[in-house]
Length: 101
Length: 101
Length: 101
Length: 101
Image (cartoon, rainbow over all chains, first blue to last red; front, side):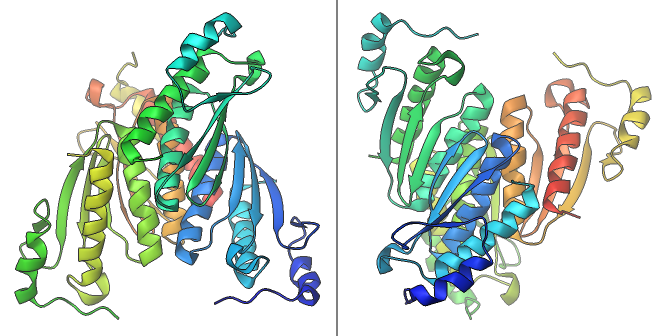
């Protein structure tokens, strides 16, 4: 079981994820990624999908051509856990590899 | 170039797509699909992604675990064209194969 | 750690997987799947890829348009384990859903 | 219809694809790509799958964990065409983006 993060722990954890926004209720983080085209966007989504199955932790996300919007939260905890932070870190690494902005 | 569909043509075309809703401005159609799990949902998304590249016509869509929400419109025409109808028909066939509800 | 299956256990386990062939050295099982087209074949591969990451157990496979050849073995054990049997069962369920022959 | 390339045209075209080998009968080209892990390998395969559907030109390929072997030929022509050269160039760009070796 992954514990919900204390709100006092969030600032430091999120400082290393500057592209991510904390939602007003502090229960989710989200960011937008823009790729060169749909091909790159969907290959990125495939990387995240594979990582999500491995971790059993899935994003809420949407896609329109080259744009992917990702929101991470831990539904079972009603807020953020280290699973979300780790998935956000994976997304940063995958996005860096694909040249996303 | 694909022409925008006349609104008089929509009722008959949409009658064969009962799971799809026309948005209030009659410029897009959408439906929700529910799968057994994320594995089935993302494999369905892969089918649609491949078909979208082949047709150069891409959905606006979102996913949360086993649920996929799809919206189709032809951005360049500011409304619906036969490209949207044909993609909706493809989605129906793909969903039928995967047991989506 | 998953133990290598005793050769005495194989006949009963493989009886429920009639589409699969045991290789002559009894260290791998394989089958061919044929789909309607590349779209269906690659969506099936995506289902298997997601399941492989979840289980941390990956196939050796090849694809040519609508045909997918899959071989399963447990490299770390130099032979077959229950991981292979369970992946083969997953593939049977996924193939049944997609209408593969 | 895409014409089969004259063998006199191959040396110059293949000079810009140094990672690719021409098979002995000069009817196909192939290369191996190695990725950090299965996640990267399958996301690369997804990029190629999407490009293949867009071009209606599909590879013969195999995968084992982080390794992908790709062979390109134009079956309908019994040899190499510009479709193969263009797909090889796409694969080089996609592989460069993902850090494949």
